[in-house]
Image 1 (cartoon, one colour):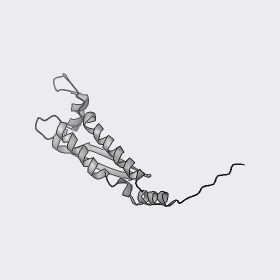
Image 2: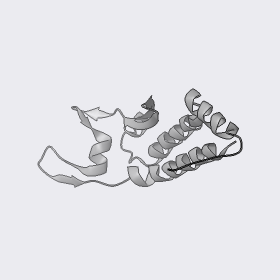
Image 3: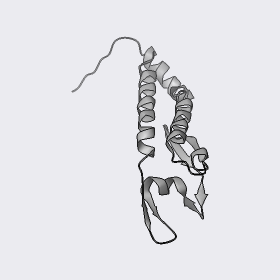
Image 4: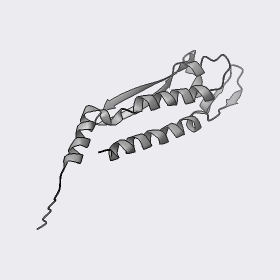
Length: 125
């Protein structure tokens, strides 16, 4: 037979769970998501500037989790220009333009900042 006993207060745990329930846990996410947009704008290759100015973000909460989606709405003939710049694309004349990884290096520091902010919130009493 296994017996478990505990002593002390559960006040810190209860406070943490209440913050989670009310969404306080993720209060720093919005400003960091915007920093991601700013980072993407600053590194997006510029021709007309339309792709760079078309970045935005969306935050969704479901199933106890949170997701950040960085979006770029600039499309030409239904094709996402940002994706074409990132991964490469064909031209109308049949040539291939090699992609350039500008998204991942720009957004990686934002992921680190988000992880740090969430960890600080977890540790907060």
